[in-house]
Every structure is written in C-alpha cells, then in structure tokens.
Image (cartoon, rainbow, N blue to C red; front, side, top):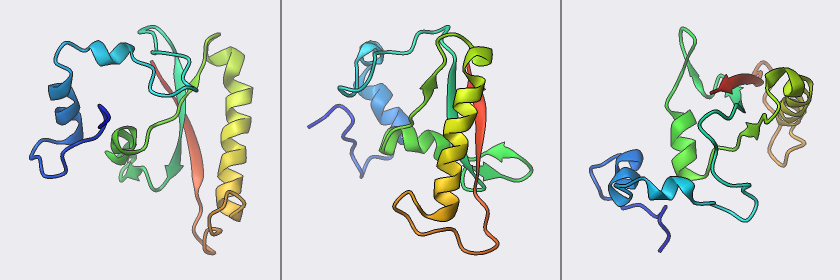
Length: 126
C-alpha cells in the first residue's frame, strides 16, 4: 500500500487524509516518481496549464478540480528555474501545443465537438 492510497470510506477529504498520515510533514521532501527532480523549493516559480472551461467557475474563478487532480492522478507543473521572463515563450509554446492537440483530438482523445472550445491557461504559482 502506497502513502497515496486513501480510504474511500473515510469522511475526511483527500487532503485531510494525507495530512493525517503525515503529521510532521516529512513526506513533503519525498520524490514521488523516478521522473521527479525532487521537492519544490519554497521560492521556486511554477506554471501549470488548465483547461477552460473544465477547471473554472463563473465569474472567472478556479474550481476545486485543480486541487483534486493533485491527489487523484497528479498535477504536473513546469519548473521555471530562471524565472518567468526566461521561460515564458517556451511555456506558452508547450501549453498551446497541448491545447491544439486537445482541440483536434490528436492527443489520443476524441476531438472537441463543434462549438466547444478548450483553451489552456497559463498562470504562475509562487
């Protein structure tokens, strides 16, 4: 059983269950996969793409699926080690390519139906 395996019958939300399993916060320093470069530093800048309208609620806020993703199947981010200005063009290009693949269905999913548009929004997490 992995640390991330949760009790589906618990009254606690996902985050509450994880906090209860790691009272001293030691798991924050753990690498979660062989691909992980390690824990994120407190002063590190991150960017994440979000599908619109899937991750948003009116009148423009984020819904909680952004955070649920992190506890169910992960929430990938781009680490911006040299700051936003140094990485902005690359991040935009990667995120737009992902959005285009979603719109066209070239990412292994069905293309979006006519009239439904998916955008990828880039924002900074600091």
